[in-house]
Image (cartoon, rainbow, N blue to C red; front, side, top):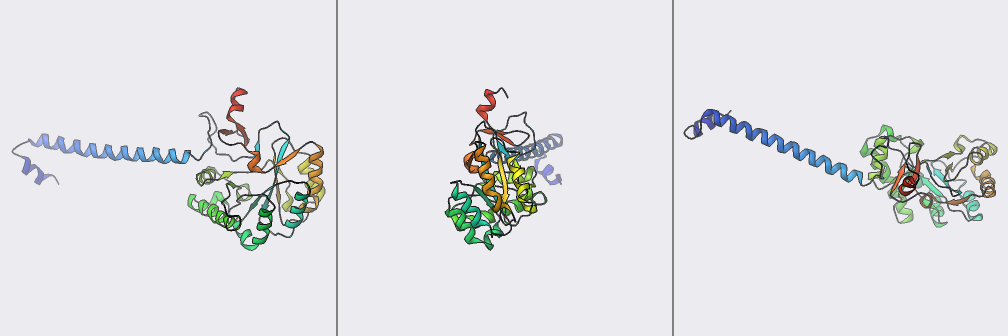
Length: 281
């Protein structure tokens, strides 16, 4: 490979010097390529990290969405996943209006396609709209690109009704892994789970739904309900009055959660960074 090169340079350099020179050039080129790759990797990580919450170096490596908010205030958030029917939406909205409560709704993109008028009613009543993915696919089984597509397709459906993109994302079936959370955050979304589950989608009785919510409530809880169920609309007023009697008030998820800087602990509880410092954590 190098024979012609040696002939040309024979009068000026020894074969030994030529070989050393070529090897040095080759190693230098390899080193430069490695440096470029390292720099590119660092830049990518830095960009991705910009979308993630601030997490101390000794924190867990597992990425966790917000399940509840660490607060001493007796405030909670009512949330509704919109994945099935919409026959109870008007009744739910009427009850929320009666008590002047704003809730957070997480619709699927395909639910919006099927029930655009219902989402419009939810929005016009002043409630917060999130994103529950487009098709309710299990994000753990999807690639980064597929998760991104699920989020963005739903975002577009929401925007077609409200005029703006949502910024809260709830994983379908609550299923997620690090890839899911990283992709959601890199897409500009805040992943939101729940700390109190009514399990109303099983069509439990009103008493069962009531007990699961009211008996387990605590400050900063995010409560999960669903539209299109047999008993949610019927028991909602009873739950609201019971929580109010316990001294609780209601916020949307966006109002309840903290803005950066914050930390999410191993249980999914969101804390202000200042709060952690003052508690010595």
